[in-house]
Image 1 (cartoon, rainbow, N blue to C red):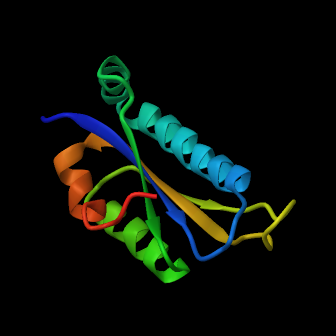
Image 2 (tube, rainbow, N blue to C red; image 1 turned 135 degrees about the vertical axis):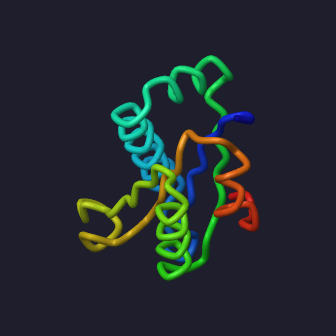
Length: 118
């Protein structure tokens, strides 16, 4: 197994403020780590030892976000879809972000390698 990383995918089409965008990315990151802990604690421990590498990328539509989410699941990756609670800027249930991993970077790159950095 190669190096581990986590990828956070954020929607740019929603015009979220910077703070909102950071919060949604944090929800995605923490949720994906918690889910990975349930499935494979050793992966998380190794990822922490390696420095908790995180990459944040962007998509420009709900459809693109959901496509990335589905592809990650199809490859057996831990992937979590964040849907906003609707308390501030967005309607309840709006998909805002996806957290993937931590997992082997070569596998994650099959899902997110083509996306641009945020």
